[in-house]
Image 1 (cartoon, helix red, strand yellow):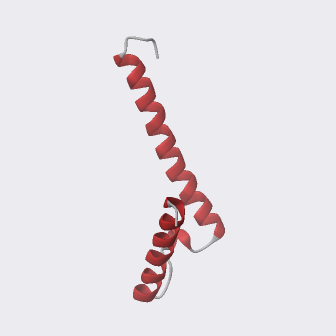
Image 2 (image 1 turned 45 degrees about the horizontal axis):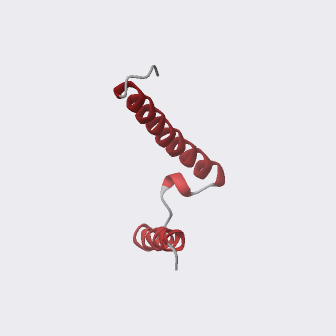
Length: 65
Protein backbone atom coordinates (compact mmCIF):
# COMPACT_ATOMS: atom_id res chain seq x y z
CA UNK A 1 0.00 0.00 0.00
CA UNK A 2 1.63 3.25 -1.11
CA UNK A 3 1.31 6.60 0.63
CA UNK A 4 -1.65 7.81 -1.49
CA UNK A 5 -3.60 4.61 -0.82
CA UNK A 6 -2.91 4.95 2.91
CA UNK A 7 -4.01 8.59 2.89
CA UNK A 8 -7.23 7.72 1.05
CA UNK A 9 -7.85 4.81 3.42
CA UNK A 10 -7.53 7.03 6.50
CA UNK A 11 -9.73 9.73 4.93
CA UNK A 12 -12.44 7.17 4.22
CA UNK A 13 -12.15 5.68 7.71
CA UNK A 14 -12.40 9.17 9.26
CA UNK A 15 -15.56 9.94 7.28
CA UNK A 16 -17.09 6.56 8.14
CA UNK A 17 -16.34 7.12 11.82
CA UNK A 18 -17.88 10.60 11.64
CA UNK A 19 -21.01 9.18 9.98
CA UNK A 20 -21.29 6.61 12.77
CA UNK A 21 -20.95 9.25 15.48
CA UNK A 22 -23.08 12.07 14.04
CA UNK A 23 -25.34 10.16 11.66
CA UNK A 24 -24.24 12.19 8.63
CA UNK A 25 -21.20 13.45 6.77
CA UNK A 26 -19.69 16.84 7.59
CA UNK A 27 -21.77 19.69 6.15
CA UNK A 28 -19.09 20.59 3.60
CA UNK A 29 -19.03 17.05 2.12
CA UNK A 30 -22.75 16.37 1.65
CA UNK A 31 -23.30 17.43 -1.97
CA UNK A 32 -20.98 17.32 -4.98
CA UNK A 33 -21.01 21.12 -5.33
CA UNK A 34 -20.18 21.71 -1.66
CA UNK A 35 -17.33 19.19 -1.97
CA UNK A 36 -16.06 21.04 -5.05
CA UNK A 37 -16.27 24.42 -3.29
CA UNK A 38 -14.51 23.11 -0.18
CA UNK A 39 -11.69 21.59 -2.22
CA UNK A 40 -11.42 24.80 -4.27
CA UNK A 41 -11.01 26.92 -1.15
CA UNK A 42 -8.40 24.53 0.24
CA UNK A 43 -6.59 24.60 -3.12
CA UNK A 44 -6.60 28.40 -3.19
CA UNK A 45 -5.25 28.61 0.35
CA UNK A 46 -2.48 26.09 -0.33
CA UNK A 47 -1.67 27.61 -3.73
CA UNK A 48 -1.52 31.12 -2.28
CA UNK A 49 0.69 29.94 0.55
CA UNK A 50 3.12 28.27 -1.86
CA UNK A 51 3.15 31.34 -4.11
CA UNK A 52 3.85 33.60 -1.11
CA UNK A 53 6.62 31.31 0.14
CA UNK A 54 8.19 31.28 -3.33
CA UNK A 55 8.16 35.09 -3.53
CA UNK A 56 9.49 35.41 0.01
CA UNK A 57 12.35 33.08 -0.92
CA UNK A 58 13.15 35.21 -3.95
CA UNK A 59 13.06 38.35 -1.79
CA UNK A 60 15.41 36.82 0.78
CA UNK A 61 17.83 35.82 -1.98
CA UNK A 62 17.83 39.41 -3.22
CA UNK A 63 15.97 38.86 -6.48
CA UNK A 64 13.03 41.04 -7.44
CA UNK A 65 9.73 39.21 -6.81
